[in-house]
Every structure is written in structure tokens, then in C-alpha cells.
Image (cartoon, rainbow, N blue to C red; front, side):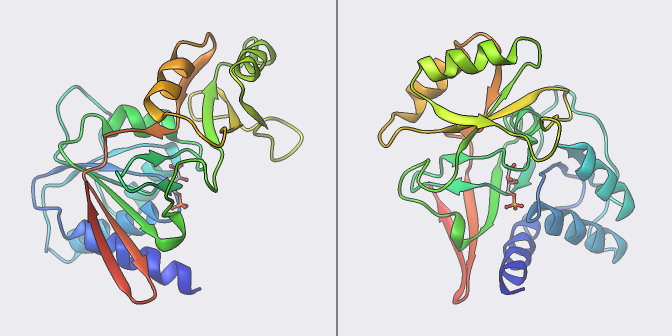
Length: 226
Ligand code: DER
């Protein structure tokens, strides 16, 4: 579709920032998938060599291997760059991530990247986080109903992610609560409150992390920086 073509355009722009020998964080989702494929294409074509990928999900790990991008587990060394999608991008390049379910590994990986480059189509741009998307919050399975009660006490509506008969299970064996954010909230304060809530593992608020974003619209790809 048109949106798919736009996502691919944004991905190709981001992958152009990757040089031979770099350690690269590999994002998760339908846009990040195009970046992994483009990395594989450039490696196969000999335009790039010596890349090491660190995958942010089992799915991206499998895809990377399929397209010939070598992958290693995350270790404490910095990554030169990470390329990932997002669910919402605000004017300061603060993000909501996690609709793809990989937010914990994404944050663990991308916090170690010298540059986090976001790729998206124009529908992901918002003026205020929470405008369109819920905030995914990864929570422990044990006692999850109690944790959800605590989240409700913080004023968060929303529901446990459950696409079928069973709740959605992350790669880390946790559940996700898709929280409905209040109309006005302070992102840093929300993150602090959520991380202080027993049972919460991590949230999809990525604050002060992204360095730039390639956002594809029908009239071209815009490059946003903070
Ligand atoms: O952060 C996420 O989990 C998001 O889903 C993000 O990766 C965007 O996914 P998309 O490119 O499929 O919209």
C-alpha cells in the first residue's frame, strides 16, 4: 500500500547513516522490518561490511538472520546507532513505543545507542503524547490484576492487551497493559510514577532518547531533530 512505500522510504534514509563496522540496534515492527531488510541488501551487495546487529525482539532476530545481518546479544558496549519505529512522535522527539510489544528490549538496547534514529510514516506525528495511541506498560504476570489496580489508582484507564483467548505475552514473559493517558500529563512525571509502581517492568515512554526521525509523507521524507 501507499503507507508501506512511505515506511520503506523512511527506513532506507535511516540505513544510509550506517557505515561498515558499526554495531547497530535493530528495532521491531513493520517499519523497522524494512530497515533490517535494507541492511541485509546493502551487506549482500557489498556496500556495507562488518556490521553487527543487536535485535530488540525474537522476531527481528529471526528476520536479521534470514536476510544475512549477523546478530549478537546485547552486551554493555555502546551501539553506534539504533534504528526503530515508534507509535507516536511529539515535537521534542519524545516517543510512545510498544504497540509492537518489544518496548523493554527496545529501551534496553536503544539507551546504549549513540544515536537513536526513528523511522515512521506521517500518521505517527502528534502534538502531544497520548493523542492517538495508548501507552503500553509492561507488567509482571504474577499479581497482574493487583498491578492493574495500582495503575487505575494513578488515574490510568485502559486494559490488559489480549488479542485472543490468552493475554498477549512479551518476549520476556510479561503482560502489557495498554494505558489510556489523561488529557494533560507531564511525561517525565508519568514515567517516574509508573516506574515507582510495584509490578511495572517498563513503559513505552521513550523520553530524550531519539536524536532524529525520518518521517515519510506523500510529499517526501522529512528529517526531524530535537
Ligand atoms: O515501538 C513499537 O513497538 C512500535 O510498534 C513501533 O515499532 C512501530 O511499529 P510499526 O512500524 O509497525 O508501526
